[in-house]
Length: 121
Image (tube, rainbow, N blue to C red; front, side, top):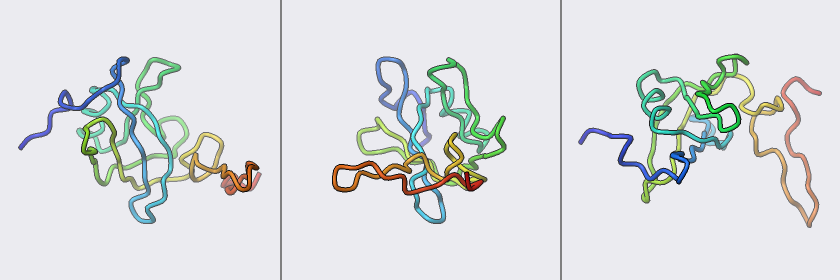
């Protein structure tokens, strides 16, 4: 059965959430949005492509930073309204310089930063 991006359940803005996970460690790296064209481009090129809501443009992860995401697996959840892309991540995934965007943990009602930027700052 061939895959058709139009069969996914996009929100009213035509977007679907995509969670990026490290293919080797299983670490959750980030969440961003894709539209049907970004899904198709990701599958065609193997370079994970998102839709930037602020710029209203495609965002190929690492195009300007060099912190690329090479697609390993592309998965669709049971409701077809969320994606999981497992990737080979080069450099930090987060724009803050951290390995993961999920670097803040709530412990006993307090926010604690559990990851520092990869450059040590």
